[in-house]
Image 1 (tube, rainbow, N blue to C red):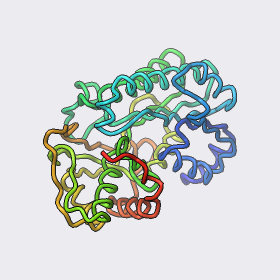
Image 2: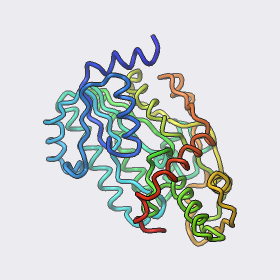
Image 3: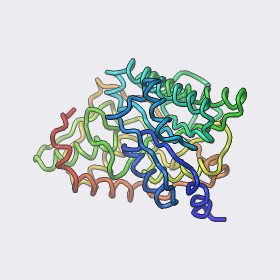
Image 4: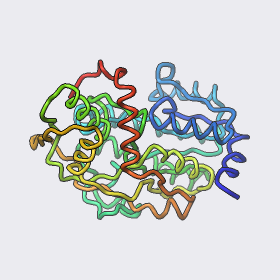
Amino acid sequence: MSGDQTGVGYWAKRRVCVTGGAGFLGSYILEKLRQRGAAEVFVPLIEEYDLVQQSEIVRVLDRARPDVILHLAAHVGGIGANRLHPAEFFYDNLMMGVQLMHEAWKRGVEKFVALGTVCAYPKFTPVPFREEDLWNGYPEETNAPYGLAKKMMLVQSQAYRQQYGFNSIFLLPVNMYGPRDNFNLETSHVIPALIRKCVEAKQEGREEVVLWGDGSPTREFIFADAAEGILLATERYNDSEPVNLGSGREISIRDLAALVARLTGFQGRVVWDHGKPNGQPRRALETSKAEALFGFRAQTSFEDGLRQTVDWYLANQVRFAGAVPA
């Protein structure tokens, strides 16, 4: 049976709650749920529900009555945001995840899908990162509060499966990018920030862009079609061992900056601010488990995905005009 047939059969008869469904990744999840025939999908909007509060979680579950919860919601940002708001990132993400999973178990929710983060891995994990190395050290300091808060959902998932037989899974995606990403320089991740800086520098005739660190760290990115991996895992994977979601391509920030400059047409200099942190030295995932366990392999090539993202930003630039530059 093909993935599409499996998908239609799985989702058509289940009520689904997607936290973070109004966000970047959520928009792709919702598209794919519609394609799979999901008829009852509830998205708790941040303006209406504060998922940090237990009473608000109860309200969501009363309204949604879900069979499946996809927990995508997160209080998240780049290195700068992590340095400015470590306490908020820890508390908000911990309380959202722990309380939501607990209330889901209490109500007999059929399946809970927890989205972790590559930030949960130790700072000096051997590359490529294997799921077995997840506990072999402390995360990189600038995003450790966020990474550890999300990682607690893995501990909870395994404990609740062991004691209660609760069916929850924990996925570890690398940074996602694509059209509809967050291009606010105060809170964005590296790819949308680079695109915006290069586009604005070109448009304003500036000869340089300034980027944090020295360009030496490496990262892995996955196009937003990673949403497919999350839904395949929901349909096919029923264990609490963590699973990486990635593309299998590692690139240095310096090379990434050069590639974004080329795709945006920026011909000036890239200046590295060595007084700012680099973040984790290297990040790249070993992704064979995702393919073996639920048949997911990233499809979109990196340059194609970047080109689509640049084109989308150029077409929608006006909506980000008021955001404060970094």
